Image (cartoon, rainbow, N blue to C red; front, side, top):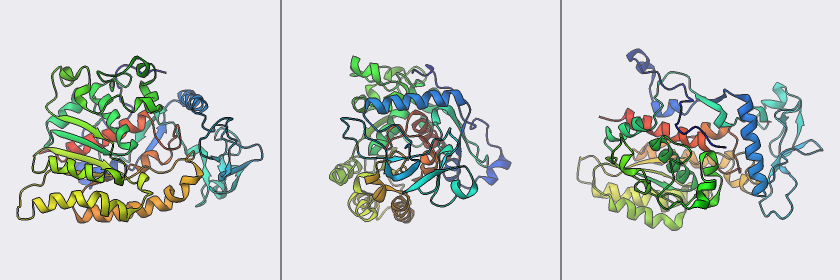
Length: 395
């Protein structure tokens, strides 16, 4: 399924902020992520749900969703597809049926909808999970934000203090970079194709299916690879650079430090970095062996200076586990593990003046196509938040 060639706003973020409203907006970055997906087209949601189901069949990911015995939870497995080596995943309740609520997320039974069965601490109400591509991101309105695409997205970056955006980390950061290319190109279908995209990739890598397939991962790594690069921003070459570095584990910590060293003292670099899932959400290892060595390089360089430090870092917390997350990953990557990890990283980043982006709400009740990753709408919205953040701190 292809999307319209141009990105159209599906947000409530286009109203300019007034002075009166500004006084209520204490922290744009915190406020904008505390929203929810509100479905605007139920039939489109079912249609995209079906696309996700077909994709899972092609990838041999379990997709029956429910069990005939009515059991649910991560420990009540779905039947494996013959020939599949995909890890075991839990079964869940039919969100369109009359028993949508699982009374225990590890080992439960599907129940009729009630306060007791749907809203208890260990309950899962499957009706809360939305297909973001059929929804609008709604915030409480305290902070007004803008929906950028194409030239206006370029304007935000070019009018800011940044001239170099580096996305660093795992597959979530790679997907965020792809979303940024689509936004800047104002095209979710072909906007992230590069000059070396193959005919085979072009058949698959478009719209929300871009995020589905392994062979789409190598389509683009640097903005200058866009075939329309010299006409990207108001029909000319951008005045900034952007790239992704997939440094997703401790093995790449040295490369992350090297990236920081290469840009040390150079005005304009913003490094948007996020790792953790490939480090088993171990906060000590992530800080001591990945983040801290890079931060130390910057702080040592500016130890005897009051000048503004470059490069700037923004830390991105991992996205939460989805219902289709394999059961083997839930113990280390479930809510408790993620909360503990986020707490320690927040603490470290606060001590060192590093802004933190927590996109958890954006994915918390969002359908994932494979249990690990999120699709087009989420990744476009992550970049809206980044662009609004950049705009909010611009001179």
